[in-house]
Image (cartoon, rainbow, N blue to C red; front, side, top):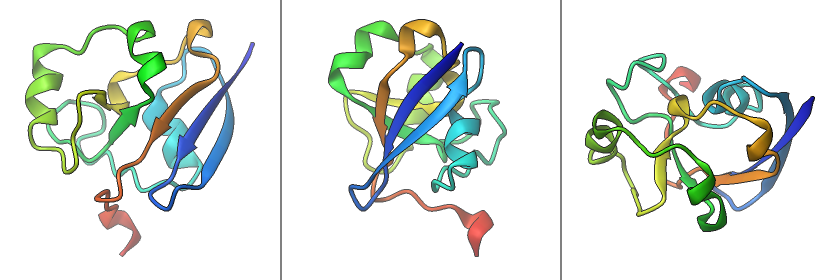
Length: 111
């Protein structure tokens, strides 16, 4: 079953992506060319995949673990609805999810 996810890039442009249930939000964003570095490859040892979840979607996500909350303390531009995209596995309930990539995001892989 196909799912839609919308990323708002650092310039405010909406980028709509289609993916499948079970895919990881970080991988979807990287495939779309967004500046989500994911240095630690999903091990929660960095905050380079930080996104801001649209408020209306926050209650539909599993709660952030204590480890994720700790890493978000290091995320540039973190807000109340911030999450690590590597910790969001997409489910049918998340069809239509909207997240923003903070303007402070930087992907060193692109240098």
